[in-house]
Length: 632
Image 1: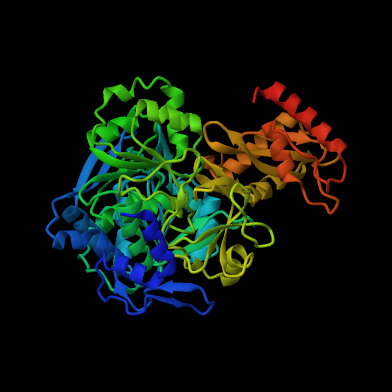
Image 2: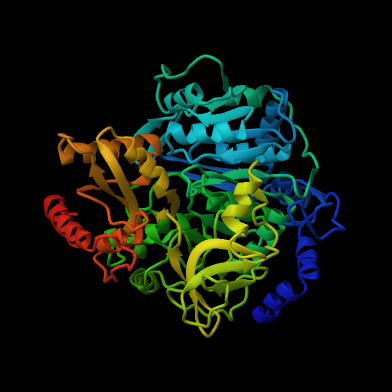
């Protein structure tokens, strides 16, 4: 396989290239229209095609004689449970749950919110929705009620599917009080709430009136077949942090996405049907959708659902145990997880306990992987660790290496080269393409390939302004990048105020809104600072109102609690430093990049637009005082 020729075909003859890739999946009606545009002149793929995602993931494999192959492995060290499901067993539960949802009145085009932990029933709920054309929105189980409310109010689901609890290491986290609070705060009433009772405790006091028992619904319902949907029918919505604080509902199509999943499993990840593939991600993130559910199941891989942490359930050898026990060929995780393992097991002693001979490749994404971690991985694991880059918006890799052959070359600290279909350029502010080794904005020439976002749910104006208005005819990624003379691209970071905490994209402006709501806070800036383990963590610089008598320690504790309550522990805001004033431009814009640079202790240039240079000294002094006091 000549990767350069493959890429060239994908750019120079898009329709022929993607028609050939679409032939790798089974359609109810194969599309005649390969590439067209919608009313906003945005590309649509395979618009007259008909198919069903659940059929491709489950039913087709049974029809092909693989019904007894293991489809799903559930491994939960936090509850000491292990379970496997064949494609036939999965089909039985999914088709009956789909029947149950139909009996509640749900039909093609309706929406459902799924607020569940890392358990098989979450995957079943996703595929049951896909089976009947219901658009699902999975919400990360660690999010607080406020985040659930935002999504309910935006997508107006007819059903909320949830569970009694999640488990965080040894702590049970009840979901139903959070759900009850969200339902109370939401503008629109959710018609039905379906609850999977995990039976982790005998205490059922948290149940409230009107709930539908998941297991009872499945047991009493008749199985239903897959409905045929248009290629452009939304499969799911996935909300990603936006710069305004209000999450954006990314809309994913069905046909283009199915084609992209099959392509990426074969060419990017190099996985053969029948092998075991593990993406250690929560279902609530884009990786969980694409590579814990849809990608591996379309490709007839066994997928692993892991409920636990890489280092504490029970130790830092957990990942290697799972790879050994289930004969994982290829794995995908965030660099954070490998850094955490490295911190706990620096000499790789726990690695030696397990047989990793069948383990071929480790993929990393979510944030840039540092070279020290790559070195540790190479020394102790000895398989290629391949960094790559993509976004919730793309749904599958945009930068990476085609690894189905053996001729790929890894450049450490690079996210790889453009993946077929992504015509990537590095532009300056004026839209001129930059020479190698010059940092600029990463943009992609339209049309984006199949699988990329259809738009933002019911907000075309925001879709245009967020992604398509910066450079005419190009998608704006929001990331800075540098390309070298060999075509490898190095991502330098976000150019807006969305930060990457352990692979989770979180909006600092949303955190700022919460911090600013404190009665003693006059103004604030939340920035992402470097963190060895999580890549970035949020740090709040806060100015108190004149006359405030509250102690700095009290304000910091309040702010940490408020952000945790509104966004959830995933936000990881644990530092709030009180300052006299924030550095600003003469026009009043807060110089967030300068604050971030000062907190990271890096070299900086004084911005020409700063209104008062003396403030830099003030903040540096405050940082020294804060570090000395907190030890951070």
